Image (cartoon, rainbow, N blue to C red):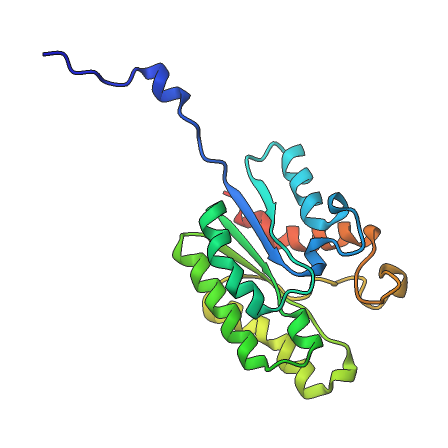
Length: 199
């Protein structure tokens, strides 16, 4: 009786899954007001490719997204892309709308848990609010990211606009969204925490 087994060449021809970085954010990562290729996640993809990295970047960011909206979308995104790393950049729209910080924390916690449940590593990206929202709210908002990263043991970028937040020329006419020139600064800020996670 002859038992057929896969040949060495057949086994070698089987496709190898590409490790994927899922960027899951709002307009700050979707590249609002810019060409898609100008947004920092696209620049990240180019940097990885130029460095010979095997990682691919999927940008599933949606302008106007809140943490509640992101939470509703995440399960399908995780199922579709099976990411190795998930970058969560959400919360800014919760803050700008004055939504409850406790709910934002709960939503982010659930997203982190869901990402870890499929074996993905998580990088959480924080944001800060303008002072006109009041010291208590703005402080609690900013601290939420630090507390979550510590509690869930995830990597953290404390502030996406680090290095240019006080420069009006770094933003588009709406004074909310960074210009194309600022995207490289954002990428470099994210890269500092992302690079050690690439393995």
